[in-house]
Amino acid sequence: MNGSMAYLLAAVGCLAGVAGVVVAVVALRRAQSRPQQRAKGPGDPLRDRDADALRGDPRRLKPGDIVEIRGVSYAVRGSIRLVEGGWSWAEHLLDDSAGVRRWLSVEEDPELELVLWGAEQGATVTPGAPTIDLAGRRYTWNESGQARYTAVGNTGLDPTGTMRYHDYQAPGGAKLSFEAYGEAGWEVALGELLHRGEVMIYPQSEVG
Image 1: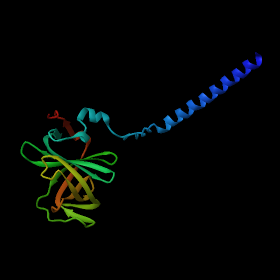
Image 2: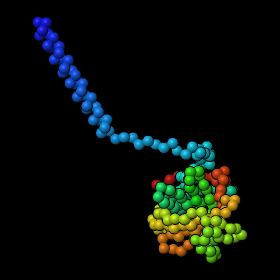
Image 3: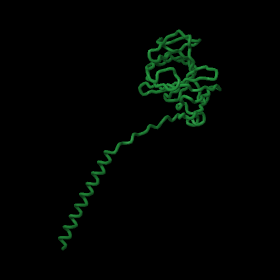
Image 4: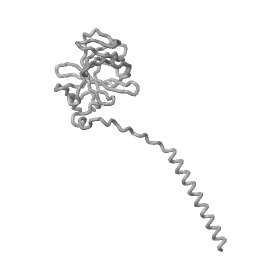
């Protein structure tokens, strides 16, 4: 009896050990086959979320919204989203009550930069030189490249396409930009760097 009981207990112990190994192997395989969660980045630690909450978030601007810049109210007629490699930014066509059209560019690199642009219709300068003199300022070349764009709303552009650009800057935050969409010629614009507190956004309800 004692020998049989010892044999029985030993057999049960072996079966329990084997079962434990099987459970461990199955659990390991399930863990290996489970998709791994992608770690999220920490985000921009300098982002002023209080300003976004109080004055509206320029990153979320869209056609139909109202923007107040330095006390002047503009309607957003259209928006262009541009992508160049891992870098992206947006340009919004604004229209005030007198029909004056401006552009507002919004980009993070990494801090938020807002620039109000006005077209220089009669400018005869072309891009490429290290410095350009225009409207009493000397602008120095900053960057150039080509981006793909997606346009929504009233921009006068095809829904998608490519854009070439040359950007210049002067002391004090003044900017000069050359842009060519598709096969069109260069468009010249002068820009003013805006402080965050000079821009107030009034989002409008989504239509439909």
